[in-house]
Length: 217
Image 1 (tube, one colour):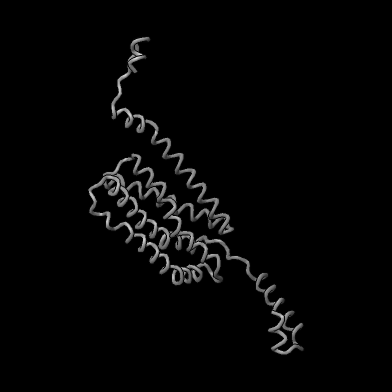
Image 2 (cartoon, rainbow, N blue to C red; image 1 turned 90 degrees about the horizontal axis):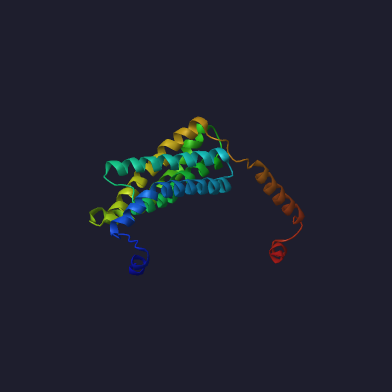
């Protein structure tokens, strides 16, 4: 710096606040980009695993609504968009998708009317989702009394993810599925193939004794 001043006459002031100003200048763009990329990744992975476009869109909507609610809670709770909150927001996407995707998957696996499938899904998968959410809540509940800004932001954001994620996964999504839910998986062909294979195997071994059948394995 001194060499630059002596040779060119140029001097630049330096202060810690300048780095904060630089962060504030680009943080909104960085946050928007990272959230969009995370949401796209969520949609692609759920589409691959669920193999259903409509169900994947519903899961994405639940994640997006949970994210909007968490941001609203941040404003009400006095949090601002800074480096810590941005990291927590991106991490929260990975948590809130878990509450919705299990419900959507189970809904696709059961048969019946939409209301029957939703009722069965909530009865069988609902307790597991609640237990998973509550265990996550227990993991960060001790941060509630922390005076550190990092831990305080972590608790507030993930508390919102816990509340709104469970709401959209166990209340909002089942209502949507009961009204405009997708059709279940077509498992009849697989069941028929398994049944045919079993019948063929039984007929081919009908003349064998129990000991001979065991020896083949």
